[in-house]
Amino acid sequence: MSWLPMLSRCGFILVLGLALIPFVRVPFAARATDICADPPRDNCSFYSQCLEARFHCGPDGYPLGYGLKYCTKFGDEREKLSEKGQTWMLDTMYCLQHKLVPEAVGASNVTCDQLEDKAFETHSDCYVQSGLCTLSAVDWLAIVDIVQLPTLFQSWDAFKETLEAGGDCLEFYGFLITHGL
Ligand SMILES: *[C@@H]1O[C@H](CO)[C@@H](O)[C@H](O)[C@H]1NC(C)=O
Ligand SMILES: *[C@@H]1O[C@H](CO)[C@@H](O)[C@H](O)[C@H]1NC(C)=O
Image (cartoon, rainbow, N blue to C red; front, side, top):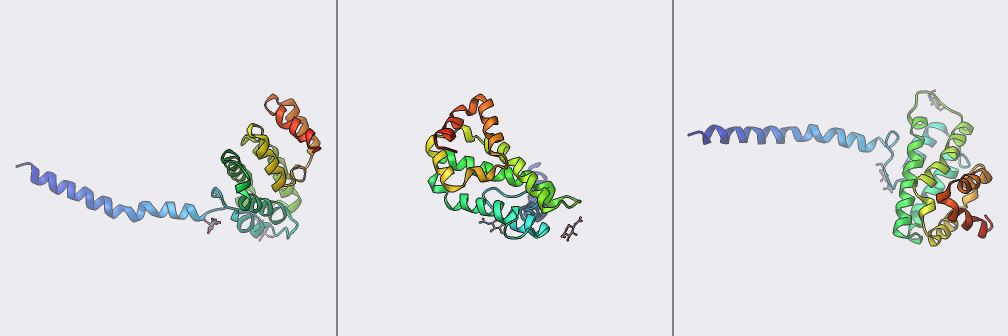
């Protein structure tokens, strides 16, 4: 007659498991709302709720004038990109926001100028590491149509030199030259 204690043990484990559910769910809910420490994918709130709320750089500052502006523009005009291009866009947005998490949650304040410098420094890495150079010319054209690429790079010439030096980006470099960029 060993099935009876076994059954009650199963019941106990089940009840214990159900009782734990609210405690297991709480950390996930808390983490989901902490967009400053872990900005969610496909979401631009980080720029207004985390950067602008903390640094107050105004409508022309980096958080609203660049970050939020181009994040929103990419999101709104994503259908101009291929599926691969849209994945690149989401990866790039995610990368750009995560690189600024230290500024968003850090103990020390930077100035708006310092924030902008840091942000612009991350652009090349995020764009290229997310696979900009591996996209098709159709996507490159769409990207140039959505954002003024040269305005997103503090030193456009330095960016082009990086592309020229890295073999994987020769085709994209050629595309920029062909289009007078
Ligand atoms: C972005 O994330 C915030 C916080 O999680 C959420 O409130 C908001 O609805 C999201 N926005 C979009 C467009 O998904
Ligand atoms: C950073 O600056 C904001 C706005 O001026 C201020 O409210 C906040 O207390 C400052 N934080 C630190 C850690 O200095």
